[in-house]
Structure formats: structure tokens, C-alpha cells
Length: 304
Image (cartoon, rainbow, N blue to C red):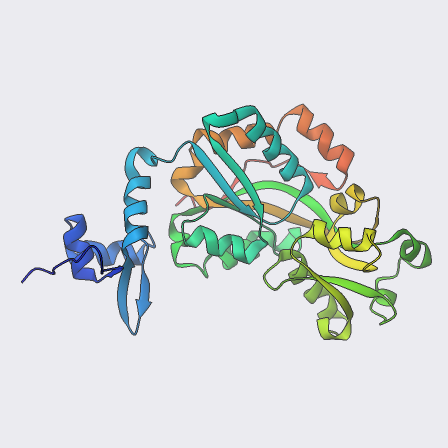
């Protein structure tokens, strides 16, 4: 007996229903699920398939994606990337949709997993450990089998501080004193992750700090310091430079793109990488300070 589809009521489809809908056998559906290649969620032990996402998946699978005239990036906050993408969108005009939203690492990956973003920019700890940390982070998502990891750049990360604080001390230990007001980041942000690890090395946690502000981006955290709402915040050297603030460095981190393999080959993404490699972008990176674009565009993981 065939599974009857009720288009107006069946928001989710069963394995049998989605198999009939796509004219595939159920074994193939299970294979696609195991590969993370099809939108699916498990409810009380059964795989269910959101009809809306299945329709979008089918459209985006045609001709390596019918939506090749868009590049939606849900990303960790970064001044260089913001400027490059903003100029890219201006130059492209109405011929394509190119957008950048500063979401933080975890939310960006959640949006990528839900196929509501085309690419995500992540940073998750020291550059020396990114070759293991970033793939390990991606493996927590069921869609990771279809993703690739591409190097954007390395950047310097640390504590953004107001000029008076920088003149007072450059000793990280002293900044943990409760006399200093902190602008912290939301859970799932790469900068917050780096800070939590640094606190752990000192036997502390975020509750040990005098938190005045929770910022949803590094630039929002820097703005809080510039407006004298906070004294210290985790963030990148380039963000500090944008606001005329100081930075006490933790070291360098890797900032990488995560995206589905077909989107890696899209002209818009390849054009973005090409723009990051231009002499103009390198000059801008030098002006902002705290960047290394040596390996920009390098495939790091996922080509298997």
C-alpha cells in the first residue's frame, strides 16, 4: 500500500513518503541520511523529513544549485571579511545576492546545517590546534559528510582593552580582577570559547568576571568599550584597531570557511576567495593589522 501524501498537512514526511515523493527506494533514502546528504531529523527513533527543506534541497541540487546567484554567509565577526564582502556585494549589484551576517561560530554552523546559509566562517581556538579542532567541531553536525573546510586567513586574538587599561597593565592575570568590567560574548562564539579556555588555565570561569555586557559580535563588544560601558572583551586585533583600542594578545587563530562541496565550486565563492587574495585586500589586512593570508583558499578538510 502506498503512503498517501497530504500536501497541505504533511509538514514532515516518513521514510516511505519521502521515497515515493522522490521516486527512490527506501534503502537509498537511508543511505542519503547516513551520508548526511538529505535534510532529516530523528523523532522518537524514526527519521522524518521536513517537506519544505526537501523541496529546497531538490532545487539546489539541480545544475549544482539553481540558487547560484546567491552567496549567504553566516559568519563569525571579522572586519576584513566584512569589508571585502560589502565591496563584493556593491560591485555585483542586483545580479546576485551576496550577504554577510555576524552570527558567531555555532549559530553559523546551525544555519548551515539547516541549509539557511551557503557558507559559514568559524574560529575555535589556537591556530596550532585548528587542524584537529575544526574538523572535530564539524563532525558534531549530521551534514558534515558533504562539507569542506577552506582556509580564509589567520588572525591575532586576545583581549581588547581601553587605552587607560592598556596603560595600567598588560598582564592578563590582572585583568581578571573584578575591578574591570567585561563585555562577554554569547555561548557558541569562537572568541568566548578562546576566553573560557584561557580562564580555565588560570583556574577561573566566566562567573569569576565582572560582566557588564553580553555582546553578539566582536565589534559590538569593542563598541561597548569605546562607549565606556566595559573595560575588557575577547576579540581580534583588527577589531581593536578599528575602534582605536588596545589588544593584549593570546596568540593566533585560524579563521576558516565551512560550506557544502557544490558551493565550493560556485563562481561567487571562488570570486570571494580571489578577492581576498588581491593586493588591495592584502593592503587592507596590513592596515587593519593582525592578519596572515598566506594560505587563503587552501582546502583543509573534506575532499574525500
